[in-house]
Image (cartoon, rainbow, N blue to C red):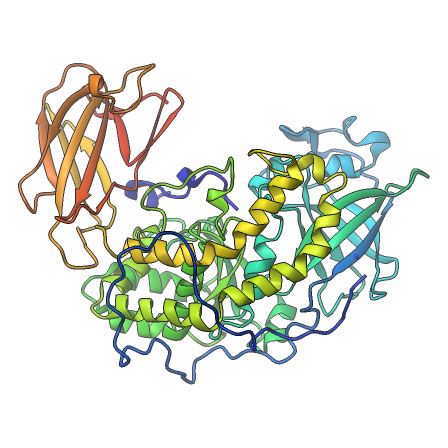
Length: 608
């Protein structure tokens, strides 16, 4: 999860460069009944698509549900014991002197006591991208008896969560040992999710949705034996999530061996200079900055070709989409993502599967601990106004071109309604939450978890946990309403400014103006002094408000006195539905959605 939504998007100019199992069995939840959808106050609802707009038509290219894919589907608590084994290091190399200091040293520093990598050393690895990746040897034993002193290696995992007090870990089993056929345990702490169940709830719900596969998950309680003769250390509740990619992942699903599987790190189907391949199709030097290769066919030219085709307006979109994507899979993934409220999926938090010998890409779900109403959790960072509903994906060439193609918005709406009515029902959510609670609540109520719950509201940590846990029951209904509301307002855009003519010239023409209901869009431009100690766009800081002529997406504000200025454009329709641009300005500690801050003369970005 990326906990800073403002980092999720780049300006267009940058995009180009830039524990024991209660049951070993258990099936899926297809038989759960549908239920009414209570939620927030009603929003204007677009007309129901006609029956002829059936969103899903089974086809030969569909991803079928694999039989037996979820052998440990029933929620349970797996007891996992990890016993430290001496892990010596010596000589010159990359070492973590402390959490912020990875450097080449002639020998291990004191953070490697006695020349040993310890769990404390592993916990210093807060920077995923540096050259240091300390790892310890452990023996793994599970309460279900499937692992008995199995040799393994343990290291930290995650991105922004590495900064949290309690860490997430990867345990890689060795010597051909597996647990339910898996050789990697991804043990996620979910420190910023007060409930600690959002990720598992999402993946368990998605097991029933057709046309894309979910991931196996299970709750895990770790006890760590440091080998110092003391009692094993209780490390609390984790959620294991099946590794995305690899031969086992493909084989369990009956998918083609040797296919490409990508985990998206920073990619939104827009042109990017880093998306390059070598002459033989192998990934270029910066390719994995965008797409992490989890299974490798050795040929990655198809994704480069897909992006080039999406950028070419002379190629009919229907041809491009039909060649590179599967409609059922795309609609199922997007509709499910909307209902689960995983808005942080524009350029990360999903995967792609490209079968060997095919140019098609299938969307795969990944990382949902920031979904299901996370941003309404007490103390969580709020999303930008446009960052809920279809506008979330408007900066992506794929999603924008699909949603602006006549008829596709009706298809998406029909897909959302079908998946909501059949699969992501209130009854399904309640059954899962009821089954989780006796498992997770007792573990979270004791150390170390209870002392580190992300509880920033009123009441004791566990009282806040219980309230947030209960709120999960209604968030899918709320996300459906957010989607419907997004169909009523203009789509967002990027705002740029320059003073090439000796005055400030503004442009917000990209992406091209679009209203889902085809309504006319008008604009209001606000210009204000960026004044320390004053709220953004406060009345006493305003310099000018202008309304360009209908249809205009540029405006000349002329010469301005030297200084720093905040600018924001509001797009509106005649019924009062409005939106701001994608931009976010930062000034004097203020986060200002929809605005840019420019230093005049020169129209350079303000000092942060």
